[in-house]
Length: 152
Image (cartoon, rainbow, N blue to C red; front, side):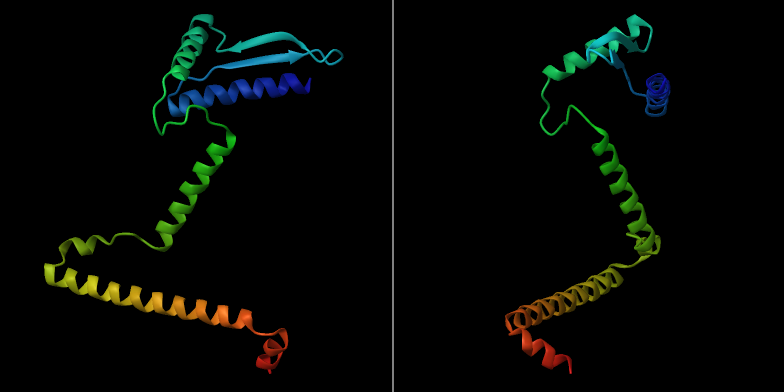
């Protein structure tokens, strides 16, 4: 009974996926004999055999074509990684907008001033990071009792 409920849910999700992203989706599901552990029933989706064969043949043909940088197979982790990255990008954009439309109206002189100011801030930040790293390296080389004395 559980298998049948899950199977129905998978069919519904495949249908939603194909409609939502306007992509071809097909499924091949094997129901196993619980006692013998082998496939006893095969089901394909979409149930229209012509549509299933069209999608399946398209998939088989695409496996033979190698496009550099194009990943042929995707799994659930790919989906979550992409969704997580998109979520992080959205949160970052909300906290730190990457562009202010008012900048479009700045003169060349104003833009140069902004660039100089940003470069100065980057240099100051880099120096601070270097200083913090040097302090961390120096303190990690000290004997353990020196850290205790410094705390007092």
